[in-house]
Image (cartoon, rainbow, N blue to C red; front, side, top):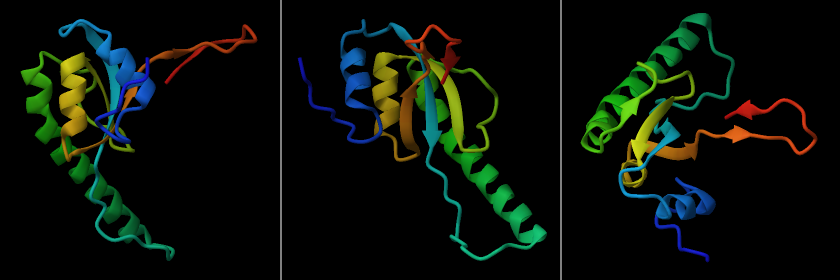
Amino acid sequence: MYQRNPFNHKISVDFANRLSNLQPQQKVRVIVFLHLDNGKSCGARQSPAERKAAIESLRNSAKNAFEYILNIIKDFGGQPLTENPGALGQIPIEICAAGVNALAESDMVKAVLEDQIIEPGDGTESHNI
């Protein structure tokens, strides 16, 4: 049965449907992409000092966004699976289905993806995403 996705583009329709079939406190593993404020967008080639400053700015933005959503994670009995966000502002989290929805409502979250195993149909090696 098709259900409307109340979180627009932050959670896929398929994932939202699977979440709705879970028990309220059933845990799932997700990868949360944080909304990063990278300051200015620069199309020109940057100097090493400018690149270093841009990277530091992204790290600080990811850290601030993560600290903001940490209360949501704790409120829903979740836990981050790493200490710091990755280079793209992503952080793996284990949390209940209701917590996933709360994260998707946050302005600090850009997207929430399932952390799942992908099994190719040709029988080759599977990969986590």
